[in-house]
Length: 201
Image (cartoon, rainbow, N blue to C red; front, top):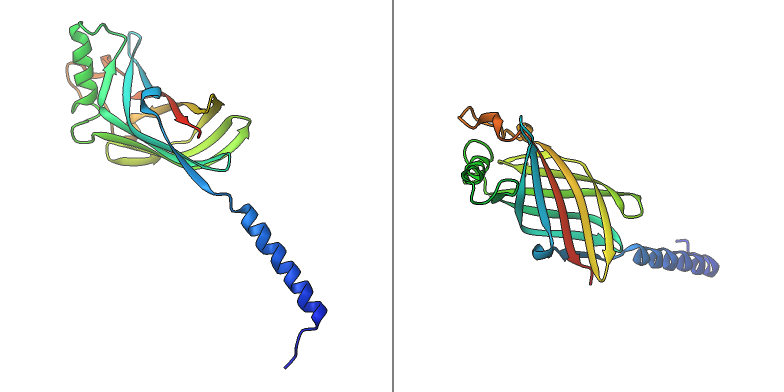
């Protein structure tokens, strides 16, 4: 049986120690920040034949995962029963009519599908504070890829991410049904402007 020389053993141990040390150094721990719902928001808008309608949606829960200072993932759960309309006065009958149309069987079918979910799978930094995001949106029971760009800022121990999602709802099987409201209310393409706030400590 051959035995390693003392010098070879020492060299091997030095290399092994360096590899192990480097390995531990690169193992930056992951951390997850929960979103502050009270300081976060989702605004929606959709074009019509005569202009545009807009409103809000509520966030049920959301989180963002970091490794060191880099965002690596996250998820957002949206309450599809929470749709409101802000461009029509609250006391106007058309406000309630549009809300019922948006959450009803004619469009989002919120009773059947009460939640929409956005799951982030990959985040690539483009420049300081700007990221390309790979994600999947589950809407009306169907999951499809939805890439987008996200801007992240930090101030006063808070981390704020902002993004705009342009969603062609027809791809998720969400289209207006031929009723008296029909396509005169909101186009199948909905724009969501999302602002998420979390404590960075």
